[in-house]
Image: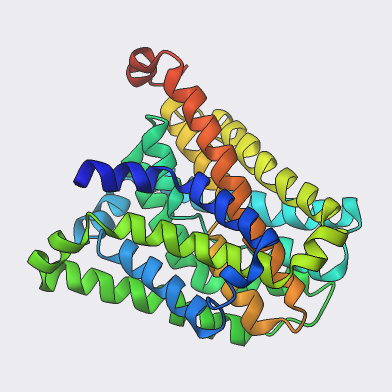
Length: 316
């Protein structure tokens, strides 16, 4: 059973792609998952991440701060600037440009840990990078979004901050407390937690795509290109940043995945809560599909390329 659950969770790009595609044809199938349900869905995802964390994870960050700090800096510099630049270059409509910037300013996605595992890269480093960028999102996401998206529309930075605390920090803290306070309960829940997160992400994305079906079909061409370029650029520049910092090959792959994959669910929730135009959430929903597919393809290629040699490689 555990192996089946793991395989179903690893197929997350397929779930997201299928549900989002179905939403364009049958939006009513996903219309029920909206409003507060999306917020609670993201909270469940973050809670699932929280129960995997221990105090030892935080101690490891303190023992090896340099790679994690480099990942944090890359996450919150490469992607936000890419999102802003691509929006300007393509001349995206204001809600699409704001949505692209918003998702670019979000932390690394929890799915990056799965992709890192498939790619046979540094899973421990991936978890630590995701954890730190997620905690940092409480301040970095509102700050960067206000700075960059504020050139398009007024941004309620304080509201973004409060929402990020509610849907990120609190569930993570509760999950951490459950891990240490109720270990038997956590052990029972852990096998199904990744699949629950994947299904929830798929429902969030499909709901947003379905609600904005007409706009996606009518004027989504440039928006789709913008989201695609954002993630391709994130993966590529993340890898190059690792090379410039002289990371080992597996660590370069890990940094590439962490930078290229965003917490699109968080972007979707923040877009719905704090931006009047519902189209702002669309790039965030599309983002989950693109980064999942690109990351999975990249992981498959890396997994097939001399895995034994790569494991032993420490700097070439």
